[in-house]
Amino acid sequence: MRGELIFSLDCEGKWGVADALGGLHAALNDRALAQAYALLFDAFGQESLRATMAFTSLFAVDEAELRAVAPALRALGQRGHRWYEPIARALRNEDFDGWVGKPYFERALRDGHELGWHGYSHHVLSDDVPREVVDFEFAGAGAVARRHGVPLRSAVFPRNAVGNLDRLAAMNIACFRRSAEDENKLLGSRSVRVLNELNVLKSSARPDVRKHAEGVASLPAGSLLNWPRGPRAAVPDPVTIARWRHMLDDAARRGGQVHLWFHPHNLVTAPRMRDTFAEVVRYAGALVRRGDLVNRTMIEALDEGGGLP
Ligand SMILES: [Zn+2]
Image (cartoon, rainbow, N blue to C red; front, side, top):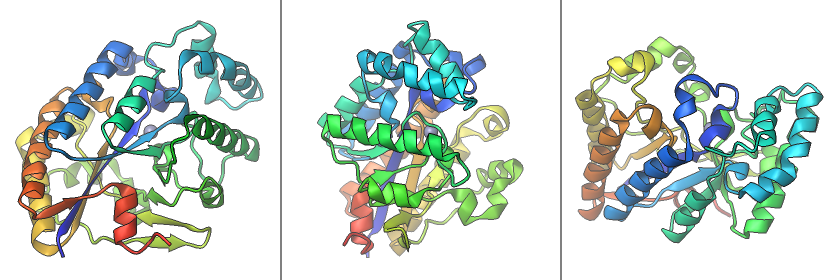
């Protein structure tokens, strides 16, 4: 069995950091995001690789749609759901810079990537979230998806907080990416996660599709491409590259799975990632060309693992 290579990108712009819009996230403006997404699409295109691009619904619409939904977001904020407050404030000020990713959604579609779902307003969707919020997020997501007319079959939960699987199944989503912390409790510790980045002998994963009672399946959590900020900045780039090369070689040798994920905006807040990403993609592309690895989207990996009915 040949090894399997999956990429998933959490595409969200400022929606993903709505609770931390100051500091380094202030740099997530349209110009910087456009550069980051162009770099990403060009790198994949050059190696003929395809990814699952999981979009936050409201990042994939235009300004007019954001204006239309602003009163509902403001009302939820006023009812005590704090997540919506900074979003409503930005929209009220007609500040759309960093909030509109429709051009990237359209390019992902044009380039033949798989479109996935990454929340509606990026509110977390774990099982402890109030019903009013869960109803709002899923109803809004369904409406945007119907307008786009693009079937969304795979999902990445905002902040990897897994929950409400019945609602996911009702949206006709077939699979989601599991949370690394759910798979390995040790990864709940930040220092363990950082130390883990120094392991250049990391193995590939077992392609392990799990079917859940709610009628949806899940894929292994994969690994975040190191985001060299804070403590993670201490990990040298050659170590990150060696670690990914080892995982990819191991997958090719043993029929394992490598699933690489990050947020495109990470290329803005940690520019060093542009080099590590480019190098990992180049190395992975060569393995795929040689036939040592097969590049699959999340849905294709689900199908291969026997998870699609
Ligand atoms: Zn996210």
